[in-house]
Length: 191
Image (cartoon, rainbow, N blue to C red; front, side, top):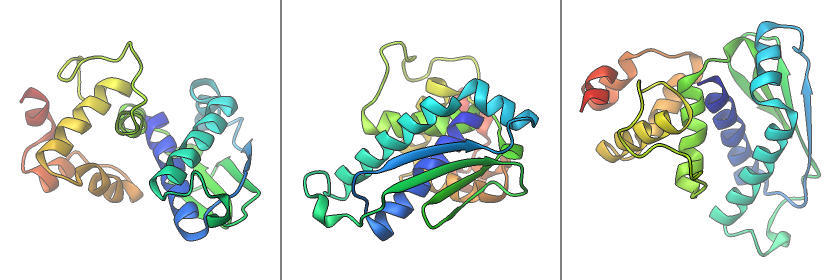
């Protein structure tokens, strides 16, 4: 869950950076300033620097394609470096210039992982080992299970995942599903 939200936050931050600025060839840096905190340790162990940088690069290429800038570098602003920081701070995440700061205190599991894999699902990067729609033990099991569940919810209401993501800027509540879809998350999982 934590992985997905963090990666989703990174992806969302890149979308903002790309939409506002565009990007040329980019150097990605990663710094875990909270490496000795529980969240920082967890980020290092479960996501890590290499996967974070790969995800930033994949997200950038995906964004270039979405904004039709993948073949015309001149259409992108010359941003030479994007830096991802894992910090021991209040809040969830923020961007400043070409920096993405994510809180080590806000590293949850299943839903965050599911949102990141939902982005992969929609981008067509489905691993061969992913579960089929409707499979899994719980909706917030994470990764592919939660991605498939979010895709189901998106099918019930177009824009659901984007709206859920907006609501989660300051935390999470199961009532978000009722607010957006009129059913509890458990009812939706049983459907």
